[in-house]
Amino acid sequence: MPKRAAKFWLVKSEPDAYSIDDLERDGTEPWDGIRNYQARNLMRDEMVVGDLVLFYHSNAKPPGVVGVARVASESYPDPTQFDSKSKYHDPKSSEDNPRWMLVDLEFVEKVPTMVTLEDCKADPDLEGMVLTQRSRLSVQPVERKHFAHILRRAGARTKVRAR
Figure 1 (cartoon, rainbow, N blue to C red):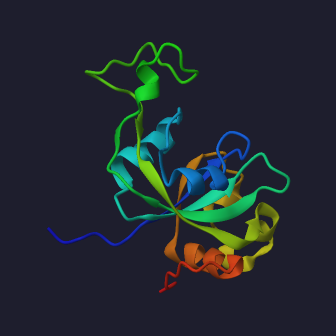
Figure 2: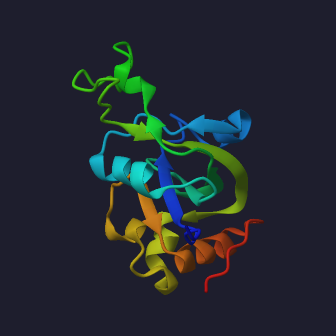
């Protein structure tokens, strides 16, 4: 079976809940607590080990891309759905039929220059990017050319050719 082309992603996190500094400290972290079916489907069906991810601080002043991560695991059931003490508990989910999936993310780098949402919306080279379309989706696909452009704007060490 031929290897599929790399895919690229953006994940949002509120910095007071889990920041790029937290991911740097932890190294690898389960991306748990996602309770949106579209985001769940992307993690479950589309993300594979090695895919690169833009780490975006949402609900921040200003919001923006602050780092790069990598998908570090195949998807697996989010254990918080089974934990009655968790705010992400889902009583309709069972271990035999889990509703919610996650992937592990690993830290790659913090970028030298944040690329803000305002920067993205004002940049004609990012036209059509999901982030600029008023999307509230916490996990979203990013086209290779957009991913490479944001990396350049951010001064990232991570490189991806735009093709």
